Picture 1 (spheres, one colour):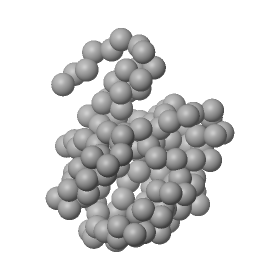
Picture 2 (tube, one colour):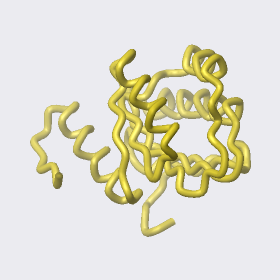
Picture 3 (cartoon, one colour):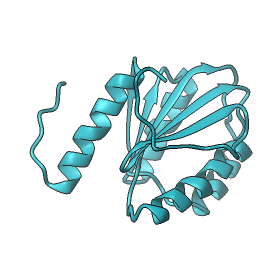
Picture 4 (tube, one colour):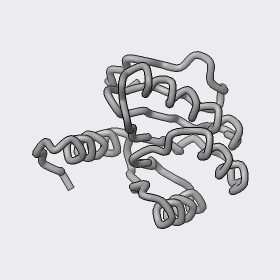
Amino acid sequence: MMGLNADYVAQDVPMAIQLTRIEDHIYLLVLSGSTTIDEIASLGSEITRLNDEHGEDYYIEVVDMSELHTIPFDLRGLRSSLAKTRVPYAALLVHPPYLATMAANILGKVTNLITEWYDTREAAIERARVLIAEKEGVKSKDPR
């Protein structure tokens, strides 16, 4: 997976989604094909379980949508799935479809969720590291 060291790769998640714990607080979700809200919701409980297992009180999602064919756009389903899981500190989207950027903007305005989009996974992961350093109070150099 492009040179990333993962300490956890989910085995029990839907085939249209890959979940990988890259490092502390950073989770890579790769959405492909026709991912549904139910599939995304099932990941929320898995991420929450991993947060608890690793003693993490927050996490950042890097969501790669490069291979996504259809957008899982069901606001009621999204709201109910968010109610059941810990909301991420940030959602960094890679190649999001236009509707996903609109939804992320709306979600960012009604919550404290940081939403940004990137051209590459690597850029999003680097930004996640900067956000973690800032949250943890460590000085870092943001490459942007």
